[in-house]
Image (cartoon, rainbow, N blue to C red; front, side, top):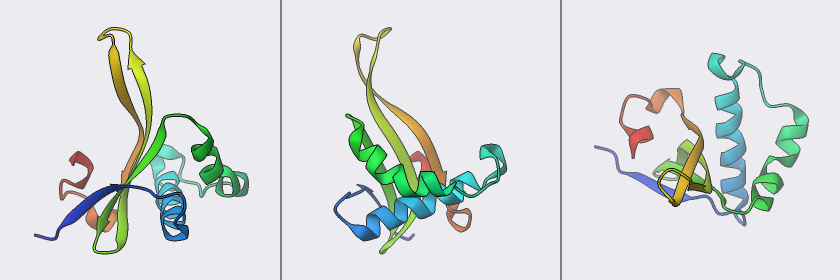
Length: 105
């Protein structure tokens, strides 16, 4: 089986920023998300916007050097459990890599 590495996106890495945009754009093209590419405004402001939100982070699922999946997450707090939690806002895997358990890792 191919090794899958799950790691946090590095905002200082142009390659990681490009991967985040590519994966979120692919996610936006899915029918459930509206089936439209990201608007120019979103493409131009997404990375800086995510960087500016305290507790926001992005996980990339990588096979070799290619990012094939993404999870956009935010740290929060559960009032019911009275403890910190992670809210996974977006989760997407590129179509050729689906049904391999990547999204569940």
